[in-house]
Length: 234
Image 1 (cartoon, rainbow, N blue to C red):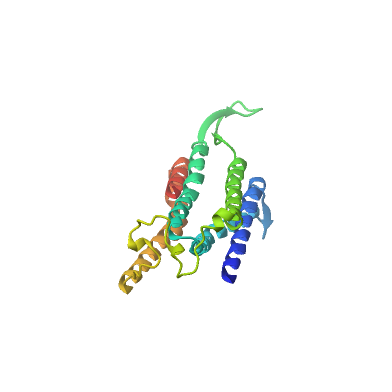
Image 2 (image 1 turned 45 degrees about the horizontal axis):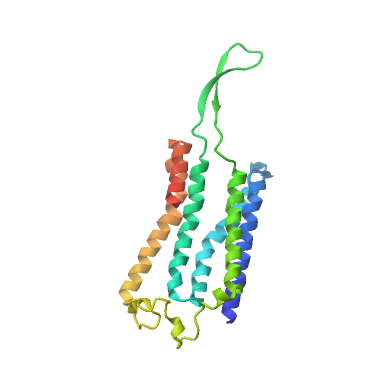
């Protein structure tokens, strides 16, 4: 029970930090300051670090928390986790980047010579709206998690003692491998094989590929880079 209480309060703090960081980003993302004589986007980097911390630790906390509920609810959890990447990416696709810069001829005041200057078009809606939207999603997540711990309906779906039949999923016709007390075990070589494969996938998907994405895609233009980042998240 003590461990469950700690999990609950840590998740509360995590969701609160993510919500506040996203809302603050909508107002401070373009704020810069001078560090060691050079101008840097300190507010953007600092607040993005907080949101990245939320993204990296959410699954580590939420998955163990799901042990409080019957296994059938893992499906809903995984669907929601998938939507957490799909929905913001879909909104980012709708927002767009305004296309690639193009050159236009202009005549500056006091000069009769035509000059080429880059002209950029704006996205469909501003960054402020996007960050506020993400902050609202995190706020809804906070309220949903609060409801899980407060509402009697949600608390009634928690598992009871290991010897209780409440450990079984709601569907009594589920196969034995879907039930908690079926006694199913995984061979050690399969377990280690899956660990290695998950490590490789996470190393490529979360570490290597995102770190080189700007170098591999941005030379093809803003549109190609934007599509790559958002479609990869989807």
